[in-house]
Length: 300
Ligand code: SF4
Ligand code: SF4
Image (cartoon, rainbow, N blue to C red):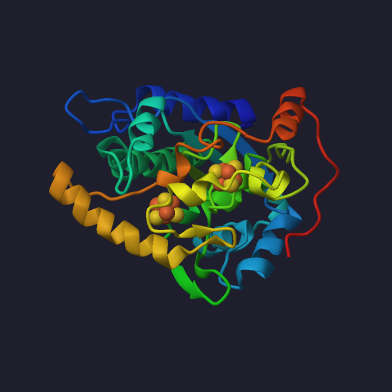
C-alpha cells in the first residue's frame, strides 16, 4: 500500500480523536491531548550521523535501531523514514502548571503519566497500522534495549531522543532549558517511529538548532532560569542531574498530595515566552510565510 504523509497524519489525528487511551484518568475523564504536529525525516539524512558524533556512539541512527529490531528486512538508510510527532500540552494543563512554584500541578503530573501512556499506545498504533499496510516499523523508545547512559559531556544521554528526532523532522529547535521549542511551543511531549517507507522529508525551517530561543537568537529572555525551583537552569544551560533529583522529590509529592503514582515538573515549560509558540518574531513570521533558510552547519 502506498503510504502518504496525509495518511500518517490522519492515522495520528484519528487516534487522538477516538482512542480510549486519550484520557487524564481524572474524575471527569478529561482527554489528555487534542492535536498533533507531524513531521518526516529521511533515514539517510546526515543529521543522524551528526547526532551520533555529537552525543556519542551509543546514540542510534534510524538505520541502526531498525536493523537491530527488524533483522529479517534488508534495508538501506535511504529506504527509511522517521515519523515524528509533537503532542502540544492543552491550555488547561499549561494554565494550572503556570501557577506551580515548586512541584507540578495535578493536571501536569497526570499528563506525564497517563498522557505519556497514550503516547506509548500511539507509537504502537502507528507501528501496527504501518505493518498491516506492508511497511515494517519500530518505535525506538519502546525497544527493550533503549537505555539511558551516563555521558561525560551531557551527564545523561539516551540511545534515542524524541526531541532530536523532532528537530530532524523540522518540528522545532532547542531552548536554553534543553526543551524543544515547536510552532506550538515547548510545553509538549514527542514521539516517533522508524519505518521502511518513502515519504518526502519535512524541510527544516531553521539554520541553527537554537533559532527559536530568545536567549540564543536575541540575547534576551532567560525566563526559564527563574522558573526552575532548583536552579537547574543557568546561562550555561541545563543541569540534568539537579533536574533529575527534583523529579525524584516530585514523585513523593505527587503520591502524597494527589494520591497517584506519578511525577513531573515542567515548570520551565510554562509561564515563559516559548510556552505555546515560537517567541522569536522573525523566525515565527518566516515560518508563517513558509520561508526556508540556507542549510544549517553541522551541529558539532
Ligand atoms: S524561556 Fe526564554 S531563554 Fe528559556 S528556552 Fe524559552 S525562549 Fe529560551
Ligand atoms: S523540569 Fe523542573 S527541575 Fe527540571 S529544569 Fe525544568 S523547572 Fe527545573
